[in-house]
Amino acid sequence: QVQLVESGGGLVQAGGSLRLSCAASGRTFGTNIMGWFRQAPGKEREFVAAITQYIGDKAYADSVQGRFTISRDNSKNTVYLQMNNLRPEDTAVYYCASAPRPDVTMNIVDFPSWGQGIQVTVSS
View 1 (cartoon, rainbow, N blue to C red):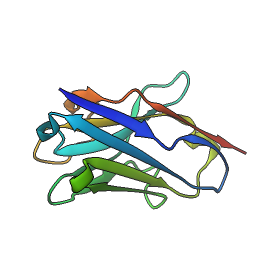
View 2 (view 1 turned 45 degrees about the vertical axis):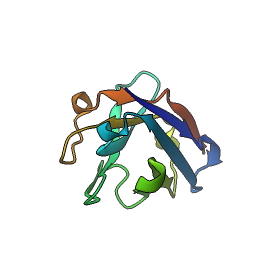
View 3 (view 1 turned 120 degrees about the vertical axis):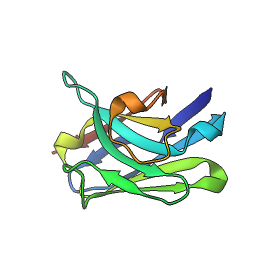
């Protein structure tokens, strides 16, 4: 069992920045891939970004490419999401997720472990 705990959310004005963190504990061998998803009110949960543990392969949703950066510190079992130039449409609950797969994936069904989610609100 992998436990994931997010932090760093909050309220920011459009154009601002936030950094989300997600700390993993428990059976961390299941965290080869760590990623971020988000869910806005009335919408389905969608992929944001993911990164593999050793090679550091990354994947981003088109909507955040060039504005968001995912990184991880393996020594701390922590993944980060640096979000710059935030837009009101980035407002959502952001979820950290992990998967034991060897290759990066954007498919939500590939992620068996999830955090509780954290709110990010971008005001216009």
